Image 1: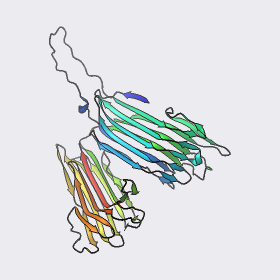
Image 2: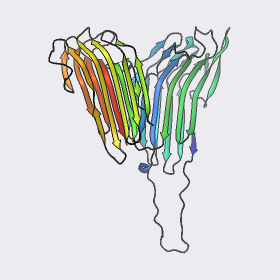
Image 3: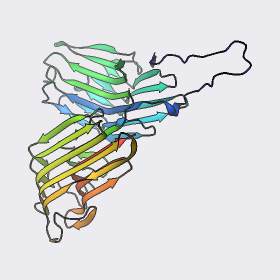
Length: 423
């Protein structure tokens, strides 16, 4: 483990009066709770891709905390193992990101663990792979960061490697008859100050293919296992957050059955992001036309986050539910002077029809729950709120039986928007 300190604030000046029998000046001290900073962090198990994106897997088990000044927050995820053609197998992955208030500082921690891996036809094998990154800011205003990697039973080209390799260890991937085809980087570490943002990143194991000929893999194939990234950012008047997407399916175990489509998120510092797809499908359950998501954030004249997802031509289970168009639209805003966050929901259905239930139409009340035969429990225009966040899912289905590749208990979401302004 390595630790570096980057001082960002000068020492407090101490004023003393000669010969005085009592203090002429009141002294103040900063407690950890009074430290002002923002947090952002992410972790994932694996990410495997080509530079031309013809092969993409992951990021798997992705967990993240974005744009907050609050401690005590935790995000976590897990995913079962996967087999990527020509690349190999990667074991179950679990990830955690959390913000912490310690006795001396505020801290963000990221951790990724992969149960094991067998890559490139056995050229690289490993047991449990773990990376950890932390960044903290103390009462003097100084930043510190740590990186740590542990890889059990690691072998590269049949040679055993220490479970705690030195930072940024590089091994030449030299294969008989082919020569040097790439490189392996172990315990990849980075700590840096970018402007006033302090960043710490750890990649436990990375494989880069630099020459063609190995198992048909293209030059530029990049395999990353055990990745954690954390940041401490400047405080701001409002921490913006929000996400929208067209469809997503989650298995009863919590694993992703079908990832979010047309996914876009609000940037912490504001601006607009967007994503769109020509059509979406969850095989055996949902088909729909084009879906577009726009996520916008502004900090002036007030902090405001707005997320809009639109999706057309929705058809669930061969006509059990049909909707001409869905708009999931939320916003959250806070005045410059502070005070409560204003939450709005302007979401709508256009021409909603449910087989056998003619009374259900586009004007259906929020949080309406019905049972649809052959499908399961359906919640229409589901709305939930906290003091800073609003979440809308226009159609949420919990399957009462297996459909397509989704087992009983799987959750399907159609038309999702959430917006938040944090302190």
